[in-house]
Length: 621
Image (cartoon, rainbow, N blue to C red; front, side):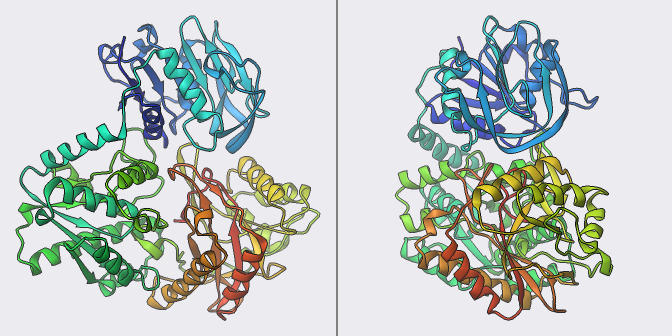
């Protein structure tokens, strides 16, 4: 019998997250490609087939070791893996009549085997377009949802199980119980611990450096800070140099705060440089979000090279250090079969080249945020550093959306009537996303007593493990979180052209908002800095800082006035950032923040993002 679980990665957003969850059960887990040799797979105690962006019936679907079903090893398929089991063993997989993204209600028909101990109703997390409509011969259907007739199936004789939903994400309430059932069915040894992993990690870092030194980019967030501490411990502070770069996209007073906190926490091998002018010049006139990310990533490397030269340091003796987490890699399409959701600044082509040359050290590249904090706690990192809200490397650059200029007047955003018929402005905006999307969306909103409009710009999302770039919808009406969440889910499931839904906080009625030409300038970034500071100060004032995991404030180049802007609040709750729920913050907080933002004088509307991940990413770009 094998000693651990092997996860076969079909390019799913959650493949490494599966391994993370298995490790939480103190079971060793590793990830292999789906075409790994059968003799290697036969050594595992169990196999888990991950999700992925492909369709099992597509001619270009990922190749896999077909003999894996003949090894006698227990197999659990998740999402794409569930569909692959059905397809391979004689079931039927078809495109779903309705897509499912986010929370769904699972009806448990048989609480046994892989679903042992579950109650009749469960909240689970879905992210799929295709669905199993007929299980293979010998399989029993264990559970279903309203849109998915075979949400769970099992062949206990062959010990093969399939789940359309994702038990590995925190928002599947019974997820860990299901995974524990599987490792029990596999007879796995429970001997993996974070302490053992830390010992191995420190040893591996020393070996990876191989006598060289590490030049680490330090943002001041938990990831780079834990990386800094790990490298100092593994190599000694004399072989590590931290570099914090003020790129002009930082929060108000952020760089000064990072420098002070690092010094107070014993990090004396840190340099701080102001490269804001260089970064602003690099992105001048750029509107495409992917191009912005690529240019920012390239500029980080250019500043690093400049500092190395100024300090007369030998580039060949210094490795690049980064606090990259696994979500950065998977969302950048950094594994076989994975789709590019958004190119993270630490995964641009130049860095990929350095990785291939063995010139990059990333202590946390296989971990998630929750595991990073566990490591930080074991290393004695102060709580005020360990639990800071995460902040992306490109900073406010990916929170200030840009535009080449106004659309035709008929393609601007406006209100839809409560009866479900969109206004002329909304219909025109909807026609850009799909001929019938405005009518369908408005009708769905009207069923909940809400008005609807579509914004004449696009935001990034993740649906079915693939990238989307679509128009957000705006809902307005009474503040009722349950109703808004249901409407948001229905809209993104029914309308493929909508990947994000926001709620209007201010003013009371949505004005006609026109898209205007706007780039990343210091003036726009200063507006966003002020807006972000208002939001973060209010979180602290209302005692809500720990009620959310992250609170992006987003600036949209939409307005009533020629220089008008809109602000979006994006509070989320998540452990791992692979999935997230929007946070339900109290009405007094929302009223206070909206009033303060509108008082800035250049803000024409304030929105609240009510979309989970999936279908929307946490950041808008």
